[in-house]
Image 1 (cartoon, one colour):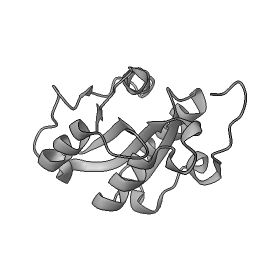
Image 2: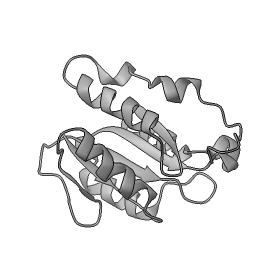
Image 3: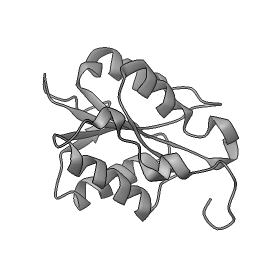
Length: 147
């Protein structure tokens, strides 16, 4: 599976490249320069724009390559409250794929572990029903030191 990211500030790019390295060298690239091959599945890692919108560059990429989407990871900030990582919710609902994780800014080692667990489970079980424990348990509460 390929990792495809869209990053505005560099947080998502750094998370995607670290994830690819920890996963043993998965192919990784940007929505701008690394489209998946026809029929190739990919995990999309993107950011949330404004108050919960999907970035235009992500939406344009998905219009052309959405058939290969297998899951989504969305970055945001806890400070946006209910709109934290909302782009991921919107993409997951539109394409019928799991929201694998919501990242506060650049994410954490625990976030990488949750995404790696999802990647490891691909092909072994139905990923549509899989929900990361971090997504299910996370609140939008601001926690000093983690933001």
